[in-house]
Amino acid sequence: MAFRSAMLGRVTRRGSDLGARWMSTWWRSVEPAAKDPILGVTEAFLADPSPDKVNVGVGAYRDDNGKPVVLDCVREAERRIAGNLNMEYLPMGGSIKMVEETLKLAYGENSEFIRDKRIAAVQSLSGTGACRLFADFQKRFCPDSQIYIPVPTWANHHNIWRDAQVPQRTFHYYHAESRGLDFAALMDDIKNAPDGSFFLLHACAHNPTGVDPSEEQWREISFQFKAKGHFAFFDMAYQGFASGDPEKDAKAIRIFLEDGHHIGIAQSYAKNMGLYGQRVGCLSVLCEDEKQAVAVKSQLQQLARPMYSNPPVHGAVIVSTILGDPELKKLWLKEVKVMADRIIGMRTALRENLEKLGSPLSWEHITNQIGMFCYSGLTPEQVDRLTNEFHIYLTRNGRISMAGVTTGNVGYLANAIHEVSKSA
Ligand code: KET
Image (tube, rainbow, N blue to C red):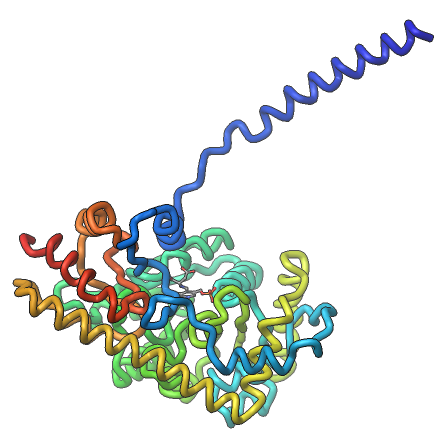
């Protein structure tokens, strides 16, 4: 008996040694991933002990004291739902009420497409999740298609379509010398793309450049898309942040709708309702008719099911509570305008401060650009100096999140920018 258990002990020990050897080899080839160009900036900022540090990296709104903001309409909605919410699963497609209200913002309050049930729409894990779900849908049902992405764009667009295994092409967008839109090159790229190509467009407040086509230019783009039979996928992460009015910021989408395009839209409440961490958004695809919309929606749900099953409930109920109540919706619209106006004010302040310092460079683009970001034109080396010498954190492409600029730090920021750029 003693002999037997001693033997067993040996076998078991040998077995576990072997197991340990296997286990240690499983992840041996895993290298650390590259830091995310945007969220990595926040990590570096948090690790810096300097009292002077400034974070103008991530596109997250701050008040004039540099503090995160929870909108009053959100606080009121939370108060109303507190204790009333059960924790059941939402359907795979998310909250129907939230989706209904969200579609009105993009397609219009009285949209014929909503009335005719031609839109396949599901609640998504914010804007990122909407883009990713669409990319997966595109891969599944148009497996040979590609996606045309503007240069530059939000860095994560490349990751999203890469992971969905959709090949990427680029199209001209920003003109560095004029710090504006390279409209002629953009139109050429639209014309030269194979008929029926997929294009990713920023609906408003282009990230990172802050440069949008004019209404007239959108009409020309839409016309050319029609001629070529291209599909427009709009990423609308900043509805309300361009003009202060969500209705005005939907203009590009409305032009495409008027022209009879079948578009897709990614919507997000991260920025315009300040619901960043709640991860609430919507993916919609405009279809030929109700039958097609039903089919498309069922396939979007089938993509969601093995990935995350169904989306989270809390943020969705906040949104539907706000948008479903005329008073709360009015308050929300007022608060969106306050956020947009504070950013516009900071643009003026930053430019004026730089000009007062006698900067030899033109900073007109700070006030010409719109939305959350200023595409400053600072080089990666100048950005490194801002971070290393002044504890100012921003992405290396020179993008400044104007939402992080305050009355308190704008002078410090301007001075630092002047120091690193004056000899350029
Ligand atoms: N699209 C664009 C154009 C965009 O700038 C963001 C976020 C998103 C989608 C996704 O947002 P979501 O939180 O998934 O609804 N941009 C900021 C934050 C980030 O990088 O995740 C940023 O550019 O700083």
